[in-house]
Structure formats: structure tokens, C-alpha cells
Length: 363
Figure 1 (cartoon, one colour):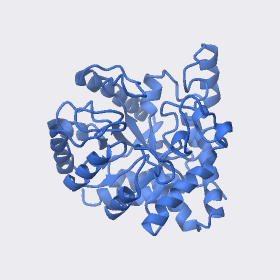
Figure 2 (cartoon, helix red, strand yellow):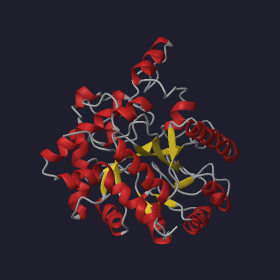
Figure 3 (spheres, rainbow, N blue to C red):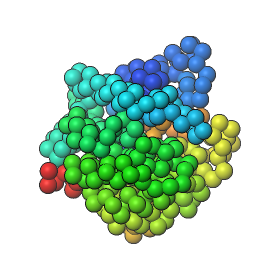
Figure 4 (spheres, one colour):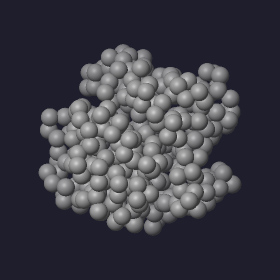
């Protein structure tokens, strides 16, 4: 198939640029070379998969980019950020915000904040096949630790934030997340009310099971799952149960399938299992996409949320993926599973476009 526009719902770009000190304007091969020559041997080093040239080469013309600045939780992995206070997390997130602003000013990125800018960006990419066009992004916050108080949600909205996931790994100031059991904390309920009032979208990714249920019961706004796979295929609390998927479908949500190999392959041990040992390929991603489609009864709620370079690199990615540009292999894989062209377009980009058009239609 010809290259198709791709919408990826989860990329930690500013975190990679700042915390990992990666120049994302460079080709992936050059970033890898520099890290290897610098003797960087930690997990994910010297084997990254994402940079702006690769996004363009793979026609990933629109994506959700994150702010990621968590409070430190030493008992839970992965422990990426060492921020010991919400004020420090707030400052770090402001720095990541500045990174996106700088790239927007240079014309490398186009910041998509509403229906008008969304339609203009997609129209320009479709008319010119992306040539000469900035890469488009919608801004999300993964873990609400940088939100100093629920009353600050409006300030973040004015700064360009459009999506908040209340928790990441562990317990945030607002909610129980991955690796924990529990629900919303009292400030979390106020946070969701402030988000609904402002028009902020709720990302349920990483919410603990009880917290997931409480959030959907309380929150009346639009909901998505940016990077989530299926617990029925790979058992783990980080994954969505079939009942959770059905609840999201009933709310009109779209679910982005992630490419972190341990979420694709049962029994994968992070830091131990290798892709060649497990034989994980992009076909495993199609299995999770298909599972969502079968539960939904249609292909309108499945999509991509790769999470590539989300604390891992090629060592924890499918074997047949060298860089994010290899997402272009998906249309043929989906076609081989019996999906028609309209369904494939939906999974690759159109389902996310429909979701945001609906979410922003009345604003």
C-alpha cells in the first residue's frame, strides 16, 4: 500500500529531548551513534526509534506529545524523574512546554489546540502530502503531578494543554496509577470537575482499576485511552480488561495500541527478555487492535498510541520495527487480517481525527 497519514497518540518528545538530552532534529542513526560513542549503556540508550526526520519519513504527521514530570516513587519502576515536590514537577513541565514552543516558533511543529487548527493541519498535509508542512501535535500531560491544584487546570488550558492523565506509575497527588490499588484521592475528584468545566479531555491510561471506574462515573467530559493494550491477551494491571474496553467504547473513546513489547507478549520480563527470544513482531500489535475491534463490534475505536522511546528503545520493541517510520507496515498487516481500506484508514489516523473533531465541535 502507499504511505498513509499516521496519527500516533503518545510520544514523550520533550522528555526525550530534555531528560535524555537527545537532539530530535537529528536522524535516529546519529542520535544512536552519539549515545554509543558517549558510552551511554543504560536501558534504551543507543537504540532509540523516534526523531523528527523519522516522523516525517514515516508520515506520522500528527501526534499527541506529552509533558512528563512525575514525583519520585522509588518503590515502583520505572523511576525516571527525581522530583521531590509538585513545585519542581511544575517547573520541569514548564521547561518541556518551552521546548514545544521553541519548535513551534521555528516552524518544525504546529500546535493543534482546536477544531480550526486540526482541520487546517490535516487539510494541508493531505493537499501537499506533508511536503513543507510542520508536524502537528496536541499537548497532553502524563501524570497530573505538575498541576499544583485543581484550580490551575484553566491556566494549563490557556498554555495549550488539552489532555490530562491523572496518574502514571504509582500514586500521584490525585489518583492511584499503575502498580497500585485504590481510587481517586479527594483532590482528584476536584481535578476531574475542573477538567470537565474547562473542556480538558481525560486520558484513563495508567489509572488503577478502581480509579478507572470512579473516574468514568464522575467525569462527564470526553475520554480517551492514549496508549493501552488488552489484558485478555497479556495479563497485567497496566492493561485494559474487556469490561473496561466496553465502557470506553460506550463513551465514544478511542484506544491507542502501544508498542512496548512487554505489553504485547505474555511473560515478557523487562530488562531480561529480548525481542529475538520472544519473537515479538508488529503482528502482535494487530492482535490487540483486532481484540478492541471485536469487542466494539466495529473498527472505529482502535488506533495507534505507540509510546515508542517511552523509557525503552529497540531492545523492547517489535523485531520488525527499526524506527517509528516502520509503522507504515501496519496497513498491509491489517489488510491481511481482512480489514478494508476504510477501516485501515480509521485505525491509522481517521479514528483519532473523528474523536477530536467531536470533542472540539462545540468549543
